[in-house]
Length: 388
Image (cartoon, rainbow, N blue to C red; front, top):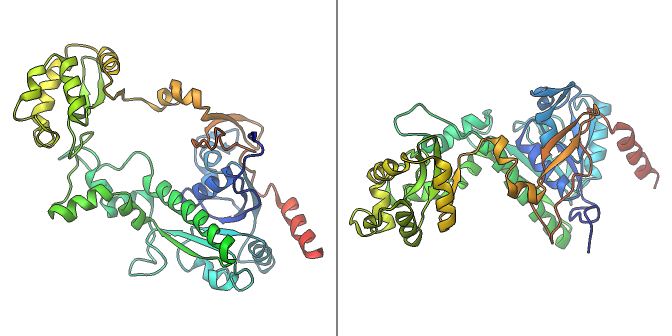
């Protein structure tokens, strides 16, 4: 049985990361969690995420959350000597990740065409707002603008309320996930053929891809999906409800669960009500259904309803704050929250990899790097390679 220190599926894979903030660094961290050696090439002032609060004794907690298990070297890629170092590192690498605007890497002489001539097995992955080509390719974009442009924001929040974005940066992090999936997939191609390739990850495309249920609704009906708050267009009751003290969520997404819910609430006559006799009809009439159910839910506190539904096997949940979610019994059992030592010696906590592979969680091998922390060891490795 392998222990945590031994189980690293990408051990021996070298990744060069030339990225800022979220999407690219998240991709790099996912690869690092699986054992890849990730060398983060930062500008002389560092990844701008290093400046984002909360700052603990001079070090960013946000930066820490996306850059564990990485090494750092600071280079001015407009300087000839520093660019030569970057070229040597890329020549020694299996993967390069970058999330600059299209054209930046070409102007630096570090495009895929430029570096693949000396390293044809390289997997080169670019993340950008709209992709490397097309009418919007040269436009900038951030998570909020991509949520707006892709349609995600149009179905987020309540009807006839001000626009709302998803509270989690889904455009950034889903793009990082797509990138990591594509990189590992292409590494298999390299293993089989020795030939690398170029991956273009457009955040707009990713946002539309993860909106598959909404785009298919539009294609199938010709109508734009609408915001439903916590409700669902095809399932009901499947949303947040107000109890006497606060809101909670219940999800009775099929007829069997619907019957159990009616039994718990004491409204068994609703099972055969023509308005609610199928999932489709309940979804069509869910506003009316919500009024009926909330009239009952308002008679008791949320905790009592949650216990009743849990006992009956109906999926439900309190609407947790992160302080509550991170201390949930399942989170504690899985060991997802770990201590993390920052370069300033301060210990914080972070959410590690949620995966389990053969019963083993990918380990946090070391904390986030100080800016340029690994310069000497990285350069020594290059010198050693040159002398072989």
